[in-house]
Length: 225
Image (cartoon, rainbow, N blue to C red; front, side):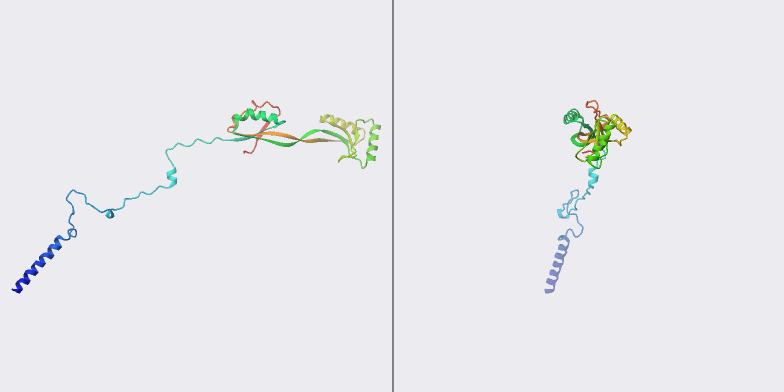
C-alpha cells in the first residue's frame, strides 16, 4: 500500500515538473510572443540607438558651391593736390571736389621759396677794410651799394637784390669787369603751402582740372590714409 502511494506521488511530481518546464518558460524555446502579422513589442532599453550622421566641417558649411562669386572690390587711389597759396583757395577746391572723393584731408607745410638774387662783395676782415673797398667802388664809378654793418653778413658790401636772375647776372658782370670779386647768390624764405589729400575710387575717371580753377596747382600720388 505504501509503495503504491509513493509511486503515485512520484508520478504526480514528474508531471508537475514537466508542466513547469514546458509552460513556465515560453521564451526559452524560441516561441513567438505575439500573433502573426503583429509587430513585436520591445522595451525602449532594448531598442538600438539611431544612427548619428557626422557633422560636416565648418569649412564645408560655410561654402556654398551654387552661390555666385562676389563682385570685385573697387580700387582706390590717393592723390595730393596743391600747393595752394592761401587757405581760401584750399577751401574752395575742397568744396567743389567733395562729391568725388571718398575721403579728404587738408594739411599745411612749410616750403622754401626764392625771394631774389643777391649781388655782393665778400666780407672784408674789418669794418675799416670794407670802407676802403667802398671808396674804390666810387673811384670806378660803381654806385648803388652799401656796407653791411651788422648781422652774419657784417662788412659785406651789398650791390643789390634782384627778382630777375638775368638782371642779377648783369650787375655782377659789370662790377667784376671793374676789377672787383663780385658774387651772386640766391636768397630764399620759408613760406606756407596748403595741400588737399584725396582718396578716390577710380582715378582714371577723376578729372579735377575741370573743377579747380586755381592756377599753378598740380597733383601727385601720395600715401593713403
